[in-house]
Length: 338
Image (cartoon, rainbow, N blue to C red; front, side, top):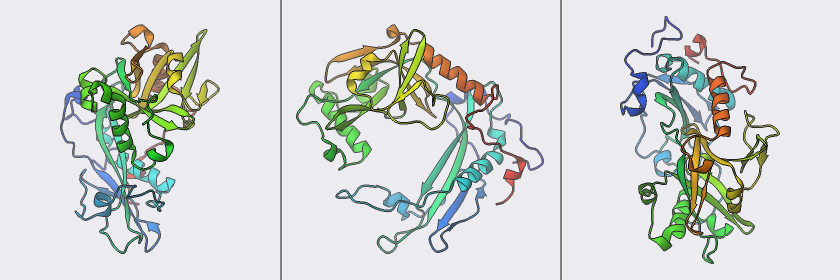
């Protein structure tokens, strides 16, 4: 970090145009702050001049991080990070890593990763422990795949042994997903995600079971957006209410999406910080032996996906006003000690 220049120019040691094909480490700095139960307060964010964590092997966050035990219980979670501390850490970690912010008009980005975990060793049962909040950064690219992907929907909703709402509360989301995979594909001999990828399904769609029916939850790595088009006007359908954003207006329908709804959609989009906006070419439902194809099977993004990509790109590039207040300014003062 050069304290005399802000922001520092993009590093000339990075091949910005080929980040997606590189697997290298970057000597970025990160930021840490710790919550002490003794004082009920957070420490000032501190810059650590490397991307590594120093942690005890017996740390609670490494050994006792699971939210589920032998039975369903209620417990107090880790102390929430106040918004002003969260933003201070994010601003500071970006401010001390400006040389890793890519040049404009590139597909590269500075990926920001927050982490909250318990670094202290176990003490008296149920006693409060320290929590450490870290923010890491590294240069990267949005998921390199932009072509429409094939998705597989795993369920056996017609079977009597499908999990009930009570049963799905007995294990974590990952276990529920693995079990759903085995239920849905057991009849045709496919048992895991690697097999699905070998069969050409790069996206996996999760379900939620209840006594009211079987509903779309989302992709394993991304949120789900369904699109209905009528006379050139789009309605975006999402299972849950999004934060105030570019799609949070009258064109959005929020509510449960049943399995039967997927054939009423004109487009399906997977969205996340990793995938950004990834079009879905088809969804295969193995239990019903049905395939729903979108955009006539084209590998190109649909019209609504292209519109959303264009709108978000302009906001990120500063070409249009940020009316949704997504952006947080970072200044040279954010480099100063807290």
